[in-house]
Image 1 (spheres, one colour):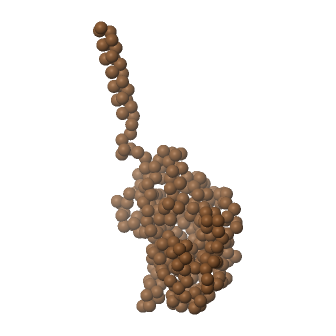
Image 2 (cartoon, helix red, strand yellow):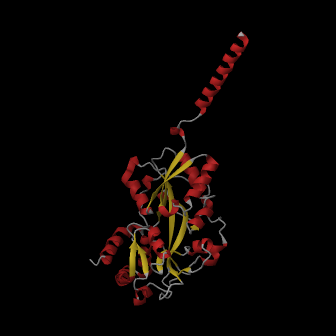
Length: 337
């Protein structure tokens, strides 16, 4: 009778040791690898590229990505500055070349695919992940809205309440239109245009998402966006009713950037994520973000060739140093002060 008892005791001890060994190998929740990424809503929303990229990156590396969603890239950067040393973000996505950013908030690093990326100034410590060209998008099936050919056309009475714009204080797309008008027309003529076009504006949205949502709900037939915006409708809605309008005044190009926070203690994982975005994530960004990819080696769907407009005249980039003065003057014009 003693042998079975001794065997049972030994077997129980073995099970206990195995359980303890397994428990000791299991990492506590505090050791789970996770990156916090600040991004604007249309990047990490249901229809944006962010979630798919995060899932693919986690599957490949085991590193989780937790997005903190904000209304715009302006809010992303503003929050980084406001939070300072207490900012929990490891990566920020969405800053544009129309914004003034302090490079001290971001770490200096070199992506593995730098040779394939569009040219950029590395002194900002930001790296481009996509780019676009501003244009008005028109709903060609709307009534009473002929296709405009220049800024001046939009001041005509036929466009009364037919234009949706975006606030340049809260959106990089809104800021893009402000910069575009100044670069295309000259400062004084641009603000004269704003004064005259104001009467034709149905509303000024706070973000691209809110403004474009009103447009697709057919509240107005014209909205400020990018020349690539029709790609989405062509691919997912099987329609070419929405078209980018080419202006004889020329068009302004803008670049969107990502950055690794200098204060992040997960820089190695953050670099891995950013490198993933700049390589395997580029096709998803091009389609879901409906922008041109920064990685020039990216293979694009046929829809880009069919409906994405590449204007004949592309203007020089905006001067970020002039932004605050332009914004102050814009507020004065749009409020009638």
